[in-house]
Image 1 (cartoon, rainbow, N blue to C red):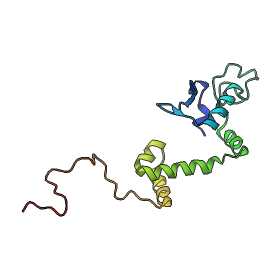
Image 2 (cartoon, rainbow, N blue to C red):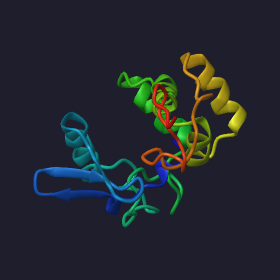
Image 3 (cartoon, helix red, strand yellow):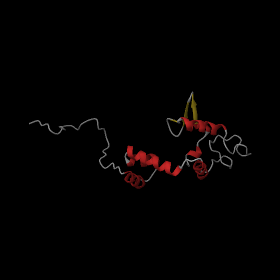
Image 4 (cartoon, rainbow, N blue to C red):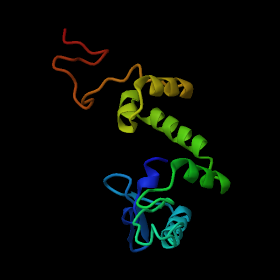
Length: 150
């Protein structure tokens, strides 16, 4: 949430019928029900009628001049409309840990490796057999099992 509240209206990109959100590069497509809500929010942001925010470019402007909304406030608003942010975040991280090695997820999200290792173990999946490198080439001199040169 602390990263989300710092987004600006410039991070919401409309390309024809497609809506993108710049969370990084490249911008990510936003699925339809959420895209409509995002565009509606962008057009009717809260806290824009105060003396401190009339020209704010923040997607989620706070009550103080130039400051974004507080992350806990945004989280509470999402929970009110039925989006359990803590559960959704945990589910998203666990899904990444099923698809990627723990160190990669830890580095990408800025998590401690012990935290991602614990979460990985909770998913029931391990990357103990993961070996980094190019797996499309065989090492020099390698012979598949069941064949021999002599």
